[in-house]
Image 1 (cartoon, rainbow over the protein chains, first blue to last red):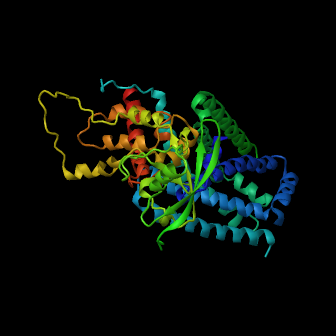
Image 2: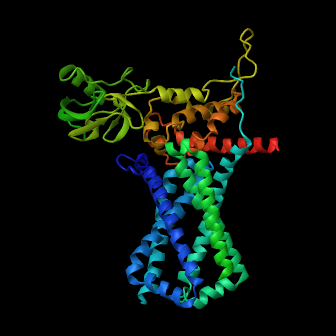
Image 3: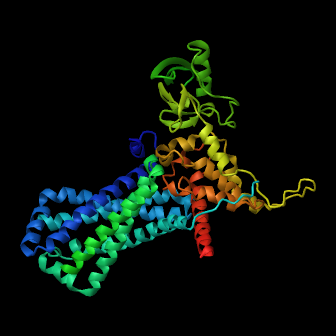
Length: 124
Length: 120
Length: 244
């Protein structure tokens, strides 16, 4: 179970934590990708099946999962862009401010998307 | 004695290419997934209605974007999984098996997605 | 604020070859006393079987790296009272096989360092007629920071790739490889790149960058590896195209 060491947070800096989260969110997104194909599949069965699917999954009960999923996706995307920059050997010396900035950007984008989701699902 | 060159197999070039494409598909996905989320959730409250979904799928430009999105996400997800598996001791000893399995599942899922996009 | 003299408990992870266990010792810490001095005090006063590595006592040999309160540090450069804690946890470095108490195996670590050929390689090695190798200050600056490695193993112990893959070269070896690749006097970069480009080389790094956070010499191994990664990609793609 050595892979558990990827998710060790004791004594680790925010850089290692970002690595752990990036790996975790990536795995969650792969699982979500597989589940998402079910939406497209339901379309081939016609309107009733699709709408029944939407009616079960786009509801206030699922909202909390949707909001968490958006957090997972936004974090992976924004952190990923940070990694693209550094893995090409760029801006290494500014890595700390860039890390903090990417967390702030991810948080703001997440708040906005969650708000929109909430408004949409709750019909406010 | 210090000058014995170790030879690289041509096939090993797939590793840096895989890295470059992981980053490129990552950037592409950051744009396309945002666009996809925008369309389905942020433009109107009816983004997910059956009519609107079918309208988008009927439009050839949209369909092309979806194919691109599917290709990029399939590559990025399965190349990512491949990298994670290769980071382990299991990956050290079973490199070829991992490549075969991961690439097969990737192609299978991509093929399934494309069939759905064409059929719907 | 650093107090004058205080009793601090050292909680040390022990290993006798078969089982691990913890031992607690009370160390009367004085201002300026280092963790290494505390370990020597324990060995002299309480338990002569406590095993740890140490040599220079001044942060240049790299022998005394241990995990202090979950973070790898040089024991000789860490002052007990500056940790601001009445209990200090000391463990051997992660990702190394523990031989006894705080002493870990380092053969693999050194072998990986050797594998990247960490010495100047030149086409013409005629020592009968030595020639001075001229290097400008700007050329020195390119690799100078990476030359301070004391091989303490702290970077290797926090690397998540080193934790799960045994043949991963590690930050120290790759920083050494870059130090020589970037040296204007060196002509052997293509001989190092073959090792660097292997599966256990640069491609296992995903920029956790924890190595740079714990290096006692502030070498920034993460920076060296990213630069090495780019060099490797260019090298491998060029070679592939030349064959075709």
